[in-house]
Structures are given as structure tokens and as C-alpha cells.
Length: 208
Image (cartoon, rainbow, N blue to C red; front, top):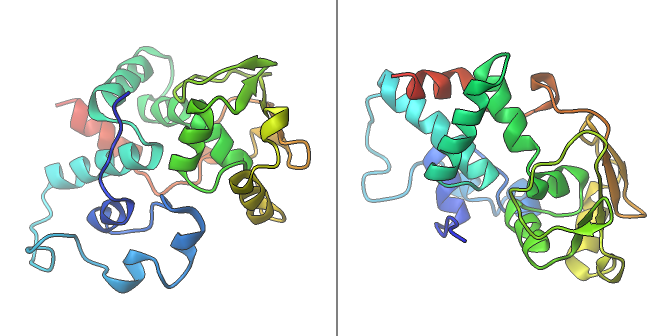
């Protein structure tokens, strides 16, 4: 399965802000944005003319990197969002939020998007009691997502749970950290998605 192999810190520097692709490291002074807050490459410190197209492109790239999807898959999400009733940009973010790997991250069972993706691919997750190993699996309202019984105490999940304790969770998920269980109580709305993404710019880019 295709995935983005570009170093996580370079992706954050390219977008000019923290995308939290490395979990807890992003909240320390070791974060690349804290040390080198400019784009990677030999021309990183040069002045760039911020055209309308560039702003739209960067917003799309930011969304792709946050959710860990590549261009072809992102286009499919956009096409599906555009066919749904409502605002296309908000539909797009809601579809991306409902990815199984993202749900594990929002629930606090993983520290980073890559960790969440790996948990799914390695068969550590169950949806409504059934094994699901597809990171892009789209959860629905009422679905129950759990960590497999034998996997509940593996080190990286324990670390993620300890980090998540006492932190506010997603409003559309009912999470039981002790049981490693999350239920989708409602579909995510735009106000539930606290990400620095201007989805209107993405819609403008694809509408050209």
C-alpha cells in the first residue's frame, strides 16, 4: 500500500507549522519547527511570493499530510465529498476524520498518525468485534472500535493512553481509555474538528 515516506519533520517545516506527525516529540523543544522554522532545502530561507494558487496548494498538502493520504486517494475523498449534500469542504474533513487510523489517534490509542496506521495494518484493532486492518476504513455512527485483547498492554499503546489521560477528547467519540474502547456517538461536524485547515482553499483549488 502506497504511503508517504518523506521525513515527518520536513513535512511540518514545509507547511510552516506543527502537524503533530511525531506525537509527543512535537510538544518539546526537539521539534524541528522550534529549531528551524523555515522550509527545507537550500532555498528554504529565501523569499517566496505567496500567490493565490500557492496558498491553495499548501492548504491541500497540509491536509494530506495531517491525515496521511496521497494525491489519488485525496482526490477520491474530494469527489465523494462533492457529491454529498452540504458544504463540500466540511464534508471532505468529516470523511477524513472518519478514517479508522484517525479514530485511533483521536481516541488516544496512538501517539502519531504513523503509529495509528501501523496498529491497524498489524491487526491490533476491532470494529464491532471484527478484525479490520484497513487504515482508510470509514467508521459509521454507532460503531465500536476496540484494541484487540492481547494487544491492550503493548508498550506504544500504554504510552499513548498515559499521554491521553486528562486531555480533552473528540466530542463525537465516547472513549474508555482503560478498556481501550471508543464508540462513534455521532458523525464529526466542522466544529468538532480542531485542525488548522482552511478547507475553503482546497475547494477553490479543485474547482478550477
